Length: 637
Ligand code: ADP
Ligand code: ZN
Image (cartoon, rainbow, N blue to C red; front, side, top):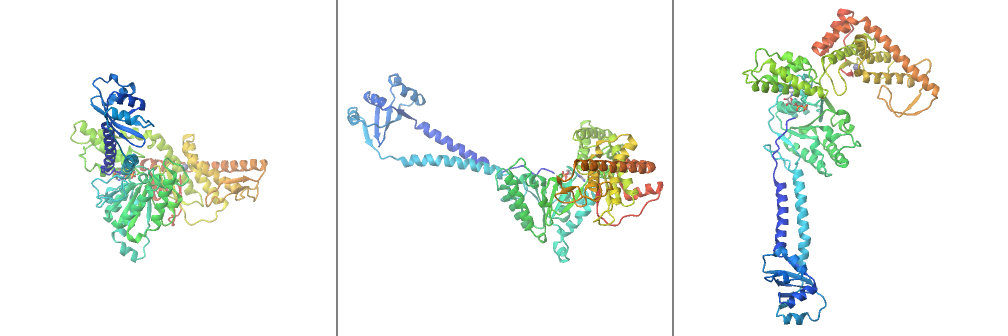
């Protein structure tokens, strides 16, 4: 996201200045009134030599003025040392502890010293000694509070008490036309735009508008841009704050900011609150992070409270972005909170071309520039990377003094960007791309060719989420509560399809299939130990689980209630089922090798293949099967 202005009010520094000034004044005051502390005996000596000018006697001190002689060497050593500070003075204040000395009055009278008594003005000293530290402490305190709070909003409108870097934009210039390559996400958010344009009309019809919308996607895929576009399309104010801004070192500060944010939003309604990096704030409770535990928990709780107490009818929509949805506190995702999720995938080749076109609009392009080709050379990049490539190309052309941006400039920019991205593991090289293409084609073909599996709606080799290299999306034809053994075996085949395809085509498997294997093994283990689906072991359950089953999420095994011998049998059954499945899948793929090749090639050129193209391939190689109806999704990575 773009960084809002960083101009800050200076009040924090003002307080620091005041504190320093106080210290300085006090130092000067003490220096001016430098006091020599004398031993009583030295005092008597000085009195004898007539150097004491006047004396004031209090209950327990003798204070007064000491005349510094022209030749200070006659002074006692202790006094000489102390006098170095007041070298150029003629006189200096002194003080000594009063001892019970009956001769003092006689000596004073003899020395013709003017003397008198004084009631102790201790209260003043006391007051000062208490007040000064208090003042300094207050100054330091206000300095830090000021520093924490003074994250101001530059040219944006004032943001009152919420001093976090809240960025309020009344007129967002961004429209849906500024966001390319993520049409599905745009379509999903169109409803929100309609609602914000006219909340009354919408609620009168009884429409249910989500309160919180979570946008999930890799960095730079345009999450912030999309949220802004919603605000721009609806022409409502956009309040942006980053999740990390909430969590401060003082407990309670973040919670206060949340309260404030919602208060401001209600005043600006209809509007959009956008919380970037929700994971920084909404990390699951109990996971220890960098900042204080309690503070983050309080802040998160406050957010939940505000969201619950907020009525969507008022026209405030809360949007949040994250690239790590898996670490979010589940409480955030419950109904009434961030219950609507919009996923933004990295753009495929056509999406990339569109994004490049959008950003290249303001450039003068040479005749040889082919943006489709640029898109082809940048698999795995996100919108922000592409915007960056366009910009780099322009800079490259400018450096070379060209009058238009040429293809060579784009190539240079791509090389630079890709080198950086490869280091961060964000783009694929051509060999990897081919491997992923065959892998996903394997999943997709098996899903199509098995009798009971959900049909494939889309296959892609563009990385989705974290860890997965591509994805095959299947649409369940109906809701499932029970599954038969054969259905589970078909599902197992789909999971193995990717790995077997790799092996068949390249003669070896890659690490990309490890998640598939994990899921295949889990499935088989459940078949053996939970569902009693083997003949050898019979209809028995061999593990006690805390909760759940394969169909509604696996729990953790707690205790083993069977013998070593049974354990060995379980292992061998699992292995056998997996090996049998592998052999089945290998046969199917080998028999449909031409379809596998065709689909992989199509994936390499288009990156994403929809059901239509897939059925066409199958049709050309053999008979195809009917199209699904329900729009429920299940993805197999
Ligand atoms: P995110 O919030 O997902 O990290 P941003 O929305 O901040 O990403 O995107 C950064 C910039 O990248 C945008 O301002 C825009 O210039 C460019 N960009 C990203 N995605 C797209 C897209 N889909 N279409 C056009 N430009 C995009
Ligand atoms: Zn896979």
